[in-house]
Length: 446
Image 1 (cartoon, helix red, strand yellow):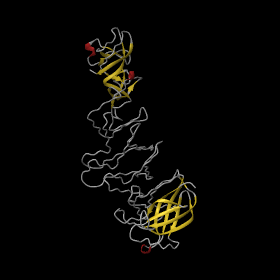
Image 2 (cartoon, helix red, strand yellow):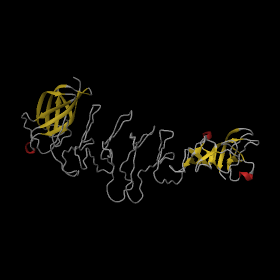
Image 3 (cartoon, rainbow, N blue to C red):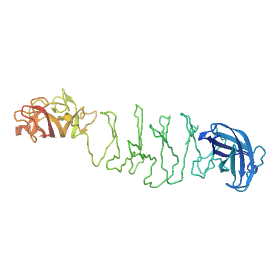
Image 4 (cartoon, rainbow, N blue to C red):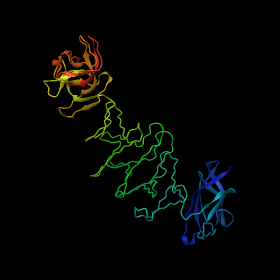
């Protein structure tokens, strides 16, 4: 037989009164060639009063112990060995399997290291939710390992499952508490290196419930305290500290922050970045026309930098067919609306429809549902491309531009008096005489 390796997955289960303890249950795990052993084995259990050396109190042999998938359970002391487990001092158990002594000896503890069972039900009552009270069930360890280890090889099962069947009150399925300043009440770790592995998963079936609730308790100021802290230490790829995901088609939120205090400075969500090229907050939308950020209320910024466009526009409804780059004027027959300009030196000129020549609109103002709204962004200031006619003199950078008789097209203003009040702005590119095309314009209505 190949080398057998023994490890204790349970040590002592008390079976008798404390005053006359003579029996206990031992549970262990046996491996052969690194794999869980299945079969039978002859075992001897020898009790010592020291971790090494002589001092045997007595021994007991169990032949043909059944081992299934590496796990076995043996009741020791029930055959009349008469061991007194209440002797002063510590006790160690030496186990021999098929003639081979397993090392080291295992110390017997008054509290189990671990228990394994298909079903473990404790008929005791713990009436307090305070961790300083006597618990229903307590597992304690003095080593570096965990006091409880839950493991499952089933693809749909949980290693540890906590369930509270109470229908009211602040009942918890699982609660973790730590007294260490750098400790964690509950830690979830996923060691998978592939796919979207999840270290912690929280779910609620309540329509108004919260799958995860974080809270900071205590009075006074808590500088730098967080009800929830999520960290991603990846150095490559798209690393995300917090990701919110929502599939609701009815006013759902992937992430929601709420500041309920009625006074002082507070923020529902705080984003911070120490990287010179980073972002304190980043928002994106999967649709090219989608809204990445919507603010209900007042938005305040110290510096606003727009990277997607270069003009200041308002939304207008325009009568007739127009396209980006066309010059539009006030429609005298329809209040608040515009139409493509059709006459030279039109003092009703309002601006240029944004978006021509690959230069997008920068900022659009308007009031939804009012006369100050519309689907066409019309540049009132900034740089846009504008359709123009070259005329007899063409267009050169610095020329003042005005409306022309060609619908929606600008031209060079040669009559200063007529151009007063009808100027669109200054040309920033040229157009040859007789040509029709796009001219870059610095819009400045006057």
